[in-house]
Length: 216
Image 1 (cartoon, rainbow, N blue to C red):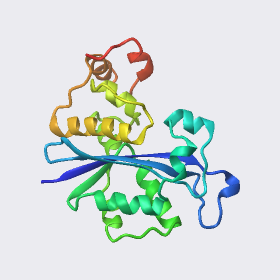
Image 2: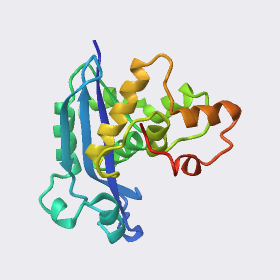
Image 3: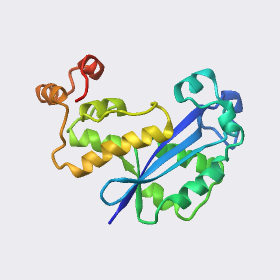
Image 4: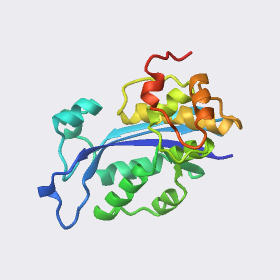
């Protein structure tokens, strides 16, 4: 039976002046958070590490958003070291899942720029599962949903501090498990009613729809 690793990256900005020939990316990873789901979609392990950026730096906005401080990153491993540990932690039979393909693309960019090579990395990247895309497909929607919106729509209580890599991975895992276990995805009744009325396109703001709703 398959296992699944649900991962979330947090990133900082790379100033334009620091984008050298060997690294052109606008962002750099500063945290890798992940949880391991067994064949029953239960969390059985977790992985969490800060990552010391080589070209980017924290500013007040990223610190306020993520809660990550320069002190957290001072003695953290580099991306090369962190990825080595992360790949070693991933079981051989596991598929990696994330909310959107942004984290997939970020790892690809940093692996190429920082010459991170691992015989398993190509396989992991090649079988990556985009949970955000899955959610839109299950709803037969072209619209791209934020994770917070999808959690509300499925009556999943969002726990912890948003934009913490491990917390976001845990919340994504709850939604992924729900989608895998429910052939007919059960939605929040308010969302389902509005969705049925707007079955061609979403004709409402998710924020407006749920701003006065408390989850059961």
